[in-house]
Length: 236
Image (tube, rainbow, N blue to C red; front, top):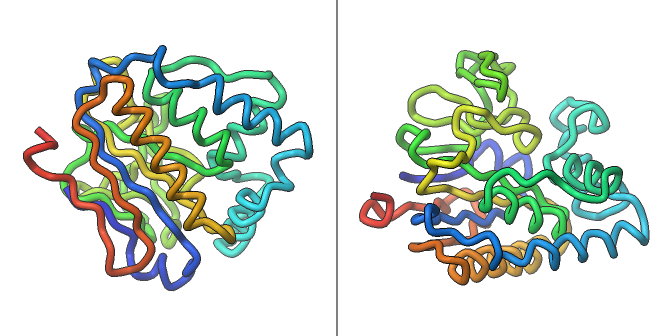
């Protein structure tokens, strides 16, 4: 499986930096080794100094949403939505060890992180403008059609696994109790994104390896010629 961003996305957003990570053996993942409290504490300390809307990472995504023609306070990137909920409720619900871990890291880095059940994706996955005929399934099971030109995560079967780029994932490929293989994608647009994404990727990789997930493969993507290829042998 090949994960990439379309050339149109790189052309419109040249500061994009992406981390992609494949992890398997999720049935053996131990939640107690993922240091969720450490990442949530980092988020709390930062929020104590100012709201999430002031974070440089969030400001960059708000600017991107405005550029895409969306009101950024109506459609928020996933990390901003998580930070808002965390600030108001002083915590997040526990869903699945992998999802909980990625949510905690997302809070700490103020960076949207998508987590996909790899067995629910057909063929390659690309972040690209929608044609308008792709199928997006909500968490309640309803099907929607993305707007033409809207940036989505699309697979070879014409499914949209996320709408409005980093706004909302699909229920179709959400990680659940039976998930054994996952693709994790983190994306940033802000200044210093290269160093921040590199640190985020190291945290994800070391946390997963230290908590029983195996194998773990990862890469950083910083330009239109780059793609993340999941090893077919590892992906079994």
